[in-house]
Length: 125
Image 1 (tube, rainbow, N blue to C red):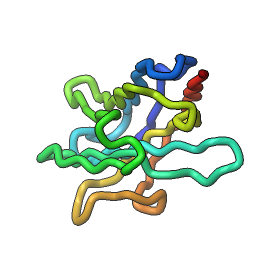
Image 2 (spheres, helix red, strand yellow):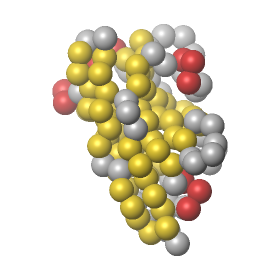
Image 3 (cartoon, one colour):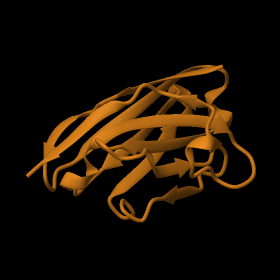
């Protein structure tokens, strides 16, 4: 079992930056792939980014590529999502997720077993 807790959400103006983090407890965090998803009001949850546990391979949604960076610190059981050049359409509840790392990188909700509760990110113009 892995428990995930997100921190670092908040409000920022267009063009600003924000970092959200995900602290894990439970089983060995270092062997899990980490995924980030977001859900805007009235919309379905969508994939944002993922990071493979051992070789650090990443995949990003086209909408955030070049602006967002996913990272992890296994010594601190923490994963982070650095968000730069934020836009109003980035406003959403951001959630981290974890899965045992194998095969292809997970880019859908069904790929992940463990989820955090989410943290609100609001970008205002």
